[in-house]
Amino acid sequence: MAIARLTIDNTVLLIVDLQERLLPVIDERERVVGQSGRLIDGCGVLGVPMLATEQYRKGLGATVPEIADRWPAGTKVTEKLKFSACVEPVRRALADLGRRTVLICGVETHVCVMQTALELADNGYVVAVAADAVGSRRASDRALALGRMTQAGVVAVSVEMALLEMVHEAGTDRFRSILPIIK
Image (cartoon, rainbow, N blue to C red):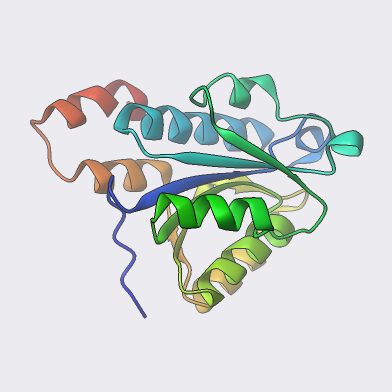
């Protein structure tokens, strides 16, 4: 198994289903939205490319403005019905980016996030899940899914861990640029 080293040059952030009608029922919604927002802000400052998905937009609504307003202009948003975000437009975008490490945030941990992480790992990607930026309706489902993913080789990280790993060292312009985000 490859070691999941998150770098600015090898990582893509995948934002999964942070939608209007889904988030109100998510346990610790404020944490999920807040930490996902911090991760998006940090990846934006560092120039890490981002992709986003929306599950059945007609029924679950669009991505919440607290999230969509933070990602860079031109971020590709893919609507899907499949639980996994590994639908053709996302697979194509990942291939076009040429990056083999995917960092995931979003909801629900035990459904779309987990199925995405497992499918990506099964297809040779190094996968990391920002554990403090994912959520489910029930805390027990989130915990079980994080456990299952790590048993399958997916790496659990925090938002701060991921950003600082990509920055790699203090005293640099990159470090100074994300310092306000992680504080």
